[in-house]
Length: 170
Image (tube, rainbow, N blue to C red; front, side, top):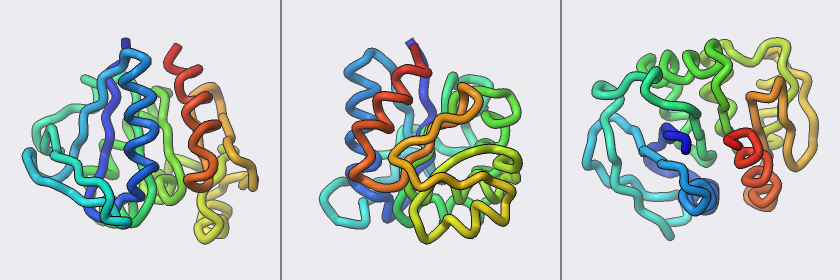
């Protein structure tokens, strides 16, 4: 089964972490949460969920993971201000490993300059950002690009997001 890196920090969209993480784990995959500090507890923007961080970004290597998961909310915008997370995410895109980004998740990939020439989706407020980054933006519940990148727009799209992410993980 796959070892999935999940980059996450404060104000993530609660269900955009919990629902996919649960689906991945139920399918037998391992989900490792990564933030600035191991042991930190981060809280979702709805205040319904808290996550204790498994690993510090300084203590992990992208080579040790099979896939990357980027939940939405305000988390990806905060993470993209930190070059460590940008380089970490870029590795997965460059190495053609599976990447799952929902809602505002693609913001981290925009900063990593990894979306040019791709077809993807994201929350409506970042559609223009994605287009400026060279993305063919689709307003659809889930978009799979290159048998590698799975993107969705919002919490309502989670069932389709999970389905396509699990298909890629095999």
